[in-house]
Length: 154
Image (cartoon, rainbow, N blue to C red; front, side):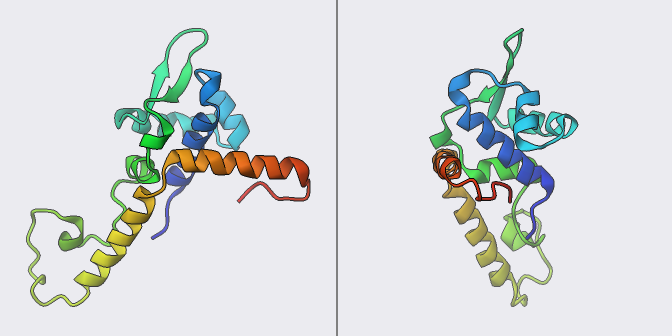
């Protein structure tokens, strides 16, 4: 499975909001500048994150975006599914849990492979909370301030 830029950039944007949570509402232009993501692209991502209740907008002169709930209540899985849709590696009805019946279900030997991969992916991303990434970001930034040779971009 390969994540699109939607998932990767969206995760970075939400981490940025969480890291700067104490600064009040954050303008998209600030996130764009810090993360090297275009404003136009962020403007496409934020509504998806708002729709599922990960971020909320604040109107007015000091407006911008904030997290809708504490970082320890938001998983990486919540963010990725909001932006990417389901994280299943294949469109198998057994894996996706849809009501549609598959004509090959009784004889398919690979369905358990896809189900195990899907379960592993979902367990992994649901087990990583945004608060953990905020702490990791703080640690990395503290180390980077003492070691100027460290590369900061992935």
